[in-house]
Length: 230
Image 1 (spheres, rainbow, N blue to C red):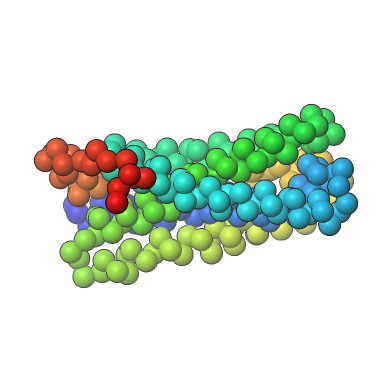
Image 2 (tube, rainbow, N blue to C red):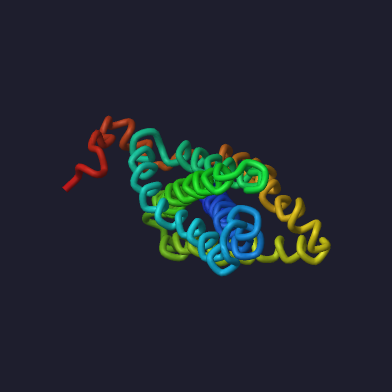
């Protein structure tokens, strides 16, 4: 039974992390091709491209904060609940990006909403990345394959990047330039609805970390705020 649960945890952690990295990197794939024209049209092409990639960087700035916040709540309410929550936050941010009107439609609110959604993506990934690796390591602690199984989650980043690049390459191939700029670039972002639904379903079927359950049973959960721990 433990081996069955362990396999579920490893697979769910990997799948969830791949989905999160897909969402996170999809933004970067699209930024320099679409966002510079749709959300920063008032600037020179080079400046617009730089601003589009600057919003991409916002996600990396938000990631440590996501790890700090959701790492704390993972210790308070459980790894499983936080992993489901961060996946939903990432998916919501990604789908919302696909819904943002252009600068021509709503003006300055377009890049502002884009940045807010990117912050949500960074927070979600920050909480997901450490949480998924921790979940696997806590589940397989003491087994001979702990190092190997714990490292599997780390391949999610390149897999997510490959998925994001591949999906957008397909969309680009089947679309005319006009279709791509107007609507079809949004489809990979909308696809996150299905991916996140799959990830939440898989993660809802796993059990909570045994170590967290032991801490909860012994009433040994941390009451400290992470920024106050010395």
